[in-house]
Length: 52
Image (cartoon, rainbow, N blue to C red; front, side, top):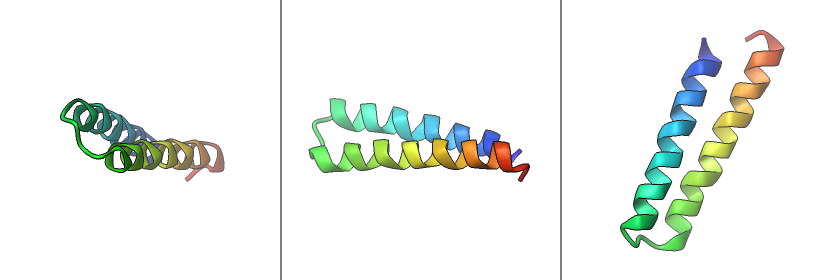
């Protein structure tokens, strides 16, 4: 269940990154959102295969 929540969070973060990019925010802000989305997907992957 937690992996599904983490995948949803990753989706929101990716959407936020694209939104921030289109609003001309500084590059580091939307790149940070993408990095957090990637970490969230990685955590979901780990939870999926660890049985957590």
